[in-house]
Length: 247
Image 1: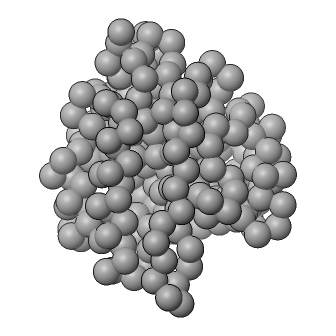
Image 2: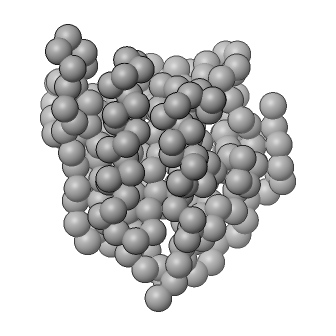
Image 3: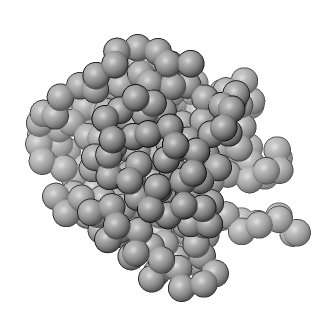
């Protein structure tokens, strides 16, 4: 389902294009993935499931080169899968990757986090996350995301939450933050699975002092083809246009 305006808001001072994308360890069509990311023209990319066992830094660097970005944070064992990429114009003021406490027998999880600034904006935090499949562990990780936002004033959290909007952790975030797609619906709503999207488990959240101008799956965006979206990975991306406080 496609909702909202068909055109994205134009660039401006303090405005940011942020893309969130689960890339399934680059196991699918890498060139299709790179084409989708480039066509979205993001300033920052919040990646989930970046390869973390075989040459993680090298594979993160490959994805950055293919998409015209650089590695801002994550991409190693500390972040445990999440990765932040960005344009050269993004100024990194601090890296705040975090390895999360792990329940015995479950996968290691982490956050890729940074405090950054773009032209015209005040410093703000951005965090990429991929939360647990276990409900109890996942709820605790939602709470840790709120802790992550205390690093700076304005903040954005994006990722694969492995939960639906009616889940307790999602509601915890939505009570304190703006859930991007309902706040400013644009493009598609559902992010899984690409062949037959039926659920929204990926999202972009922003603190109340960030204005969400548009947010959704970039169906129909020039350069983004449905064939590439299906071939790139097992999730659909979420693209948001945000207006940050200026200073």
